Length: 204
Image: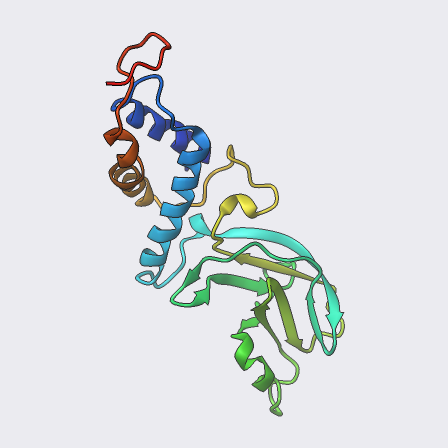
């Protein structure tokens, strides 16, 4: 799997094939376009997939919990999840030991109605609210939680850098090259450019 830097430099070479050495497009712009196009592509593709590919899932590791009334919640905000059809793409909330059974994930609007029955009072459910993960149910003894999902900006996840493997699907690379060159870079290619390789800004 490619890193964000590798994808960025690959795209820069394609862009420079149409521009001069004096173009105004910098690496930050390309990375921003890649992030946006990844989000758009995944929103379309995730609606088709029955199972979320492991290659696009990121693990937030061990998160500490604090009490919030009768609930528990993460002590820090979580990065912005990618929303697909109006729902955050959370793939796992569960014990730190990933072999243990996951907690059920519910919408926060429904959180008031869970665990009121005779047969579900001893289970744990999780929901996202105000950028925190909340746990409801048999949560008294819980102090930590593991959270995984698909995030809007992969670099928001702690430990992720532009030199880490970028969480994408193989089908994304040809798509992102086409879309960025066709849409995002188009405005630069159509502007007058300096075709003289002399370090001066000689526009034609």
